[in-house]
Length: 142
Image (cartoon, rainbow, N blue to C red):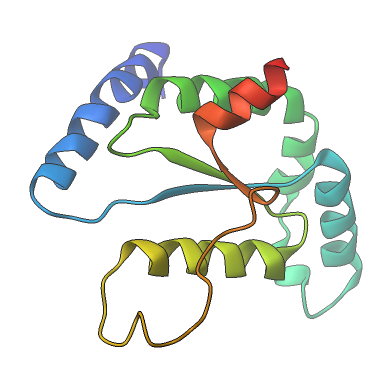
């Protein structure tokens, strides 16, 4: 997209999300974050494992060169689209299973359903795995 289109998206996105929330839609935003090293390992596995090769494309290999630029763009997106009514939740996804279980817990924590209180299961997420974007920024600054 053009720079103008990108800026328009960043400006309009929070307003659109607010409209959805105002209409009663439950809206969750999760960003599954992996380290550059984990990404390299996953790409290597996908390149060599015939059962995972379908997940890999030449674009993935090319994108690795731009990891730092993507990180900068991602940070701008978070800062411009994170709001109190639709916050970004940043999930450490270096361990896929742990990341997914934390996301499931977070969704279940925010949804009411029959028998929720009787399960006896903790729905609290691990603060070392999942954190709200603003808290992440504060932690990075300290």
